[in-house]
Amino acid sequence: MQKIIMFDFDGVIVDSLEIFRSNFTAVCKKSGHQQFSDNDRFLDLLNGNFYEEIANSGIPLEIISDIYKNLELGIDQTGPKMRFFDGITDMLNILTQNHTLIIITSNSTPVVENFFADNHITSITEILGADKETSKVKKIQSQIRRFPNAEYYYIGDTLGDMIEGQKAGARTIAVSWGWHSVEKLSTANPYKIVYTTKELTDFLNNNHCSCNQSPKYCDG
Image (cartoon, rainbow, N blue to C red; front, side, top):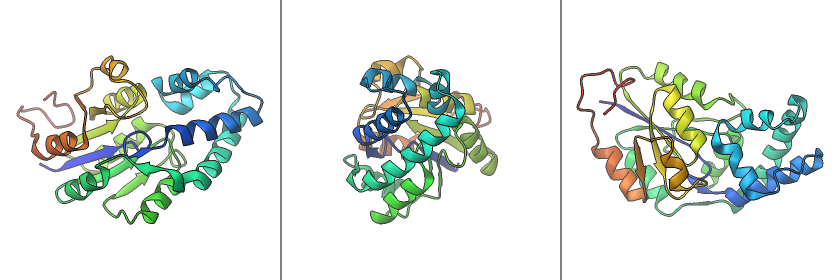
């Protein structure tokens, strides 16, 4: 059965926490909002949908729009400093041979496209950033509608990723090397937690549904 493998970008594919956090806190400060300078306060924004959590923090929507535009510009300028986590390029090259790979991220589509182009990565079918839709639930569901009767996986590194992926109807896989701890990720009861890119590659290549449910509702 076809597998639609959807990856978060930051914290799963690339080690970008400091780049993303520093750019975000800088543009927030320019808008008069300094409450996210604390790293734990920033990471708490990833307990749910990133942009909803920003709105819930009390920042007006018009300011959020300005923050996003300046954040995109800042990350695009510092993007070349981002690096792949160990084993990621090999994993993508292996998985693309048999599966459809998609990026669903809170980052900007052009930022991710430019990063992949600069690193000669051609294994990704589509990139859906926050400029196209801020809800990961809606973006994941759009791929479920696009590819009916498949198995759907969302690989993320934050509690919010796990919550949105499950709500959308995908099997969520949490990686241990990202922005949130394994302990926090475990509270969302992900379908699986992986600790290396090889473990993730082997699982996605070998795991097959054994129940009689439709893949969208399969519980494994």
